[in-house]
Image (cartoon, rainbow, N blue to C red):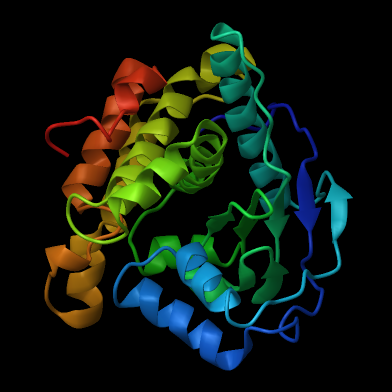
Length: 283
């Protein structure tokens, strides 16, 4: 994947090295609930944290350093997230609309306060609609490779593009659309929302080179890395790994095959209009 010469917006909030474990109110019970929801049932951590936070409100952590990170990992996140935002800026402009980027991409270690409660690294990357920020502990890249078998920078970029895809959904009302359809089940609003975010990630992958003037680009092998990442985090795959059986009634993200199919649909069409999973007769 080519990205070294890509533009950097500096929309990064770096909390690495800051103490995050003692932030406000969710407590151990809320964190455990979120972790169980993610690893056993595949529930989006932000959904679980919002539910717990309604009972025991948390506090926002003090802001970290905002700007352009100097380390390689931070630079990568800055370039890729900027590229994703640039693509969505162009998409919105083509419709006569204005795109508002996320309030920030937060890099943190182990735990941090969010608008959705206390986030922990074990939850994986997530988007919090309450504060419109993406949260990422870079140790997840190791998990992505060793636990999920998804290697390469393009697999990491897919994750970032997927999470910013959730921000696009928040801006366009798709999140509320999903909530009205229900949170669990093979045809649920949650599954449709996640598959649409996968498709949005594919749209970014298809448009990145043109929008960046070639500074950020993915070749066919990179697309395959992205597909492997999408496959690795399918509900059926995760459930088989964690509980030894597949329970479609508890799906929240879609199967590995579905996640690959919708990511590929975004790449092929390069158009978010092809990503309306809510109207799709077959997911």
